[in-house]
Image (tube, rainbow, N blue to C red; front, top):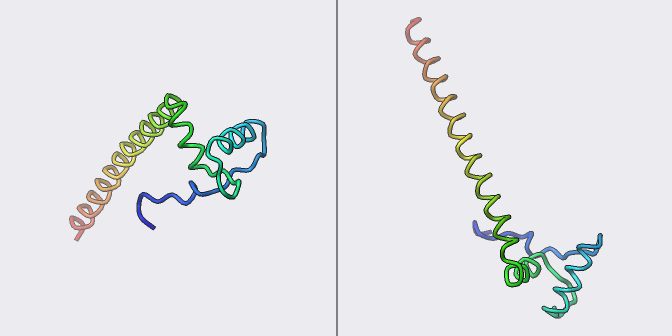
Length: 95
């Protein structure tokens, strides 16, 4: 699997609620898949063409959350590093 591969995109979308039903029907009519199965990737592509501002808002929010999480991880990592460094220094001073 390549880093960019996302197997979830190939999942078939079932009509389990009204919104999914509308999306599957709309994308199914537009894409006319050979096996009559609509995938998540097909829905994303259709939304990207016809409702790009929706996907852009989701992508921006996802990026911001990921960036925030990365900064938090760096802070925690630095704190752990300093604690371990101080612990090692204390142990070497005791000897």
